[in-house]
Length: 223
Image: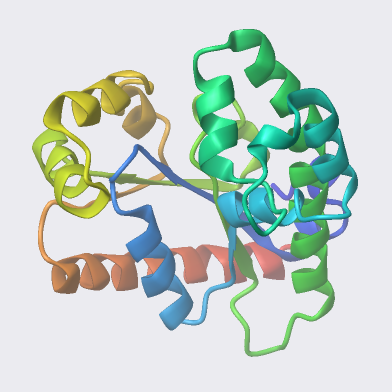
């Protein structure tokens, strides 16, 4: 427990929970519900945006490797343009990962340690890291618990059509490009099924956060 080789001393003080799920499974809504319950949630996608802000090393490296065509009118990297550039080019995608992934990991570790250093006695000694590819890249072992958000394919397709403006073919193609849902669920310690209403989802999140809180306090007492 704790994985200090990854998280440093924070791994001894905090239960580090990985949160993942396929596209349109509802992870963002789960994040909001957890934060409303007082959880500290680190969104890896938000960190990925932060590390390529203008003036930072990853920003300069991306422009150097991919050209100024990836910039928007505000001189920030246009993530849509960058994604379109690397989506169908494996070599470029690997290059982007080499530029960004070490910096994303370093920033997440920094934020986890910041949480540990500022832990209040009344806080639940846990941190949740929302990252889409935890299972895909084989990173499950660095977390004390893995929480998977899942939903039926029909529910996910419906969300992509109504919320993201995709066609049905595009939505199903995006789902098919990810690992099978059963593989993700099989790796989970805790599962949230999001096929119902927001109210039902929030009730489930409340129950799951209660379980995480108990495990976190037990983990903290053992240190």
